[in-house]
Image 1 (cartoon, rainbow, N blue to C red):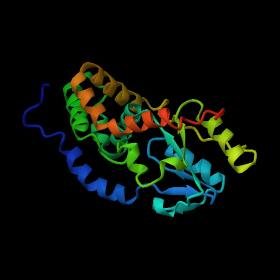
Image 2 (cartoon, rainbow, N blue to C red):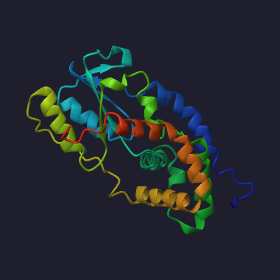
Image 3 (cartoon, rainbow, N blue to C red):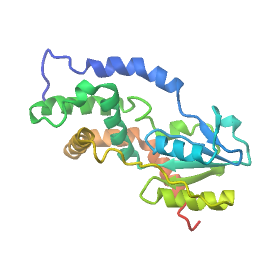
Amino acid sequence: MNRIIGVNYLSCITDQREVVRPYLYSKMPSFQTNGILTYARIYKNAHQSLKTFFHALNFNTEYIHPKQIKSNEKIIVVLRDPLERWISGLTQYFIERVPNLAMQFGNDENLNITQDIIKLCIDNSVMDLHTETQVSFLHGIKFDQCVFFKLDENIEINLCNFLQGALRQNIDIKLPSINQSKNNNKKIEIQQSINKFLSNNKNEKNNLLKALDRDYKLLEDVEKTKGFFSGTN
């Protein structure tokens, strides 16, 4: 890969990453509960939309540690394809944390720069909570208490079907929009650049998939044992 000699344009990633990560991890999402069910919040798994959704359903008590979750509470866990989530998380990282580098994307003259940026992020894998593994948010909770949902086009109907049965009430609250990047051209440019890089660099993609291995194993475990809630469970 070509590099521009004498231009340390990547230092802002490594410098900013070391400053931001300790703060972000101190703010790691907690668990929302209504005393009957608990929702485990995971960044980049429609976290903000689901947080609002569950607050509207009176999931207003927060546990800051999984040991606070009662043994008779079911835990709602929404999981996402690990690679898709990482790409989305890295895109948000650029937009929010290093916007000067985000502006490099979409410009053919900056192709070498953007490739170097992406490679550095793959080598580090975890830039902040948006690219942290999903299992890291679930550390300490009991697998048998979990009801798993897949973040896809059926997430709203599956959640509502489950909640109506578990809470024995009609759920007429809509899930806020979870695909807010579709109208953001810069996010689309960044995601396209990352996908193109991964398509053209198989070794780098394999290294990234290895870094996400624990998430893939979790999804595989769910599929083989409990399954994802689909409304017919």
